[in-house]
Amino acid sequence: MEFCGLRILVDAGVFVPRQHTFPVQRAAAWAAPDSMVLDLCCGAGAIGAAIAARLPGIDLYAADIDPAAVASARRNIRPDRVFEGDLFDPLTASLKGRVDILVANTPCVPTDALALRPPEARLHETLVALNGGADGLDV
Picture 1 (cartoon, rainbow, N blue to C red):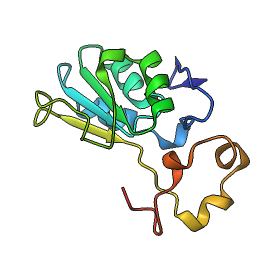
Picture 2: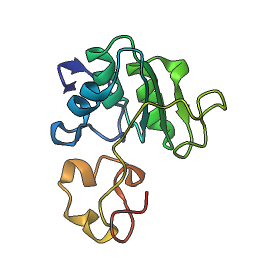
Picture 3: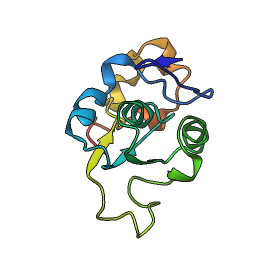
Picture 4: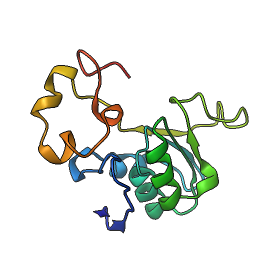
């Protein structure tokens, strides 16, 4: 799929990045060329990849709890920089405290509203990428 002018590989069941959900322009404006950028809840890694395309010198890392998302992200950004686990938990100790820019497209759909999502999201994306709990703010 195309995202911010890049071809992003997205495996079945992985959250598909949507043009209206990305903080790429703002993060790229704030980041220095050598910034450490962390893309949490990275899905296929589209947001981080798009920031890195705009600022090739950044030190990009990503993490997601979903193994399928991590596999996709490892095809879109450096595989050794993508971690599997819950939020900050999988990061190595050497990365903690070094984050300059944090981007995250967290699950934010209230549980009761999941059934109202478009079929392409409701039927083909994992609930862990969408379900934000009772008020959409659990994460």
